[in-house]
Amino acid sequence: MSALDDLVGLLDLEQLEVNLFRGDSLDRDRVRIYGGQVLAQALMAAGRTVEPDRSVHSMHAYFLKLGDPHIPVVFDVDRIRDGRSFTTRRVVAIQHGQAIFNLAASFHVREEGPEHFDRMPDVPAPEALPAMERLPDDEPETIDRKGAPQIVDALDFRHVGGQWSPPHEHRGAGRDPDQDTWFRVRGRLPDDPLLHACIVAYASDLTLLGTATLPHPLAEDESLMMASLDHVMWFHRPFRADDWLLYHVHSPSAGAGRGFAQGQLFCANGTLAVSVAQEGLVRMIH
Image 1 (tube, one colour):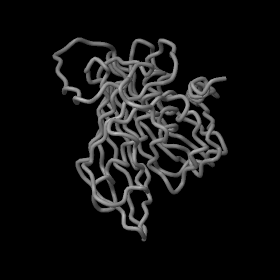
Image 2: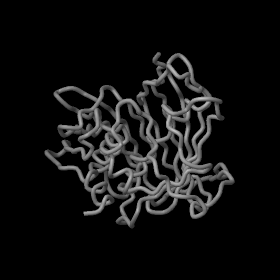
Image 3: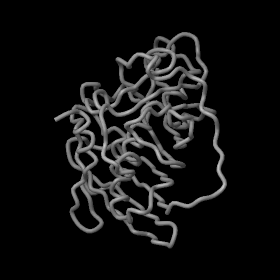
Image 4: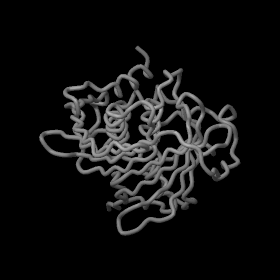
């Protein structure tokens, strides 16, 4: 079985009841569940209760507690509303009898209307960039890289400007709070828009919060404690996770122990497919 099969299998939730689903983890060497995994599995649970003519257009999520990678996560879906054009779902992820995460997602039938979008940044094509040898990692103190084979092997990352510099190694001069990274899965996926959306949600948590640390170099006796607090995505146009996507990330603000970052995902033809925003804990430790 390939790493991509593992990733797709991770999102193939077990249905326990009409509105109850269960998801497992592959990353049992982690101290906590990778946030993008819970995000993607919760979106999949919501989408499994929605008619196939409606695709996700927005999701708003809060990370409440650290997830335990050694036991499954139960996803409880609340069918809040089924309207003529929009469908709304709320999902609570549960472990040890407690909520660790909640998500609100909205799905919309395809409609026509006025259209415009930002231009894609002028960056080198992914084929002109080397594959990344190191994994983007916003949680350096708590994640063992050996525990994330489905990210490393299932997704091909090409970082504009060289290898990505994780926050715990960012010392010396500060940098602009911007990053550009191409990515796609290694292989082909079924023609299931929900699966493609969930995989992009899975990958979207990787470089956001670390971007907020780039203007702030660490002293030799400092380290960072980082954790996602909330995560928002808007899905504007169709895309495929097995085609190249450019993830442009900018952090407009950091302060009060929190960092804020915004992301845009562009298809290779320049169309804006997804917008992302996240705030997370960025705590300096001496």
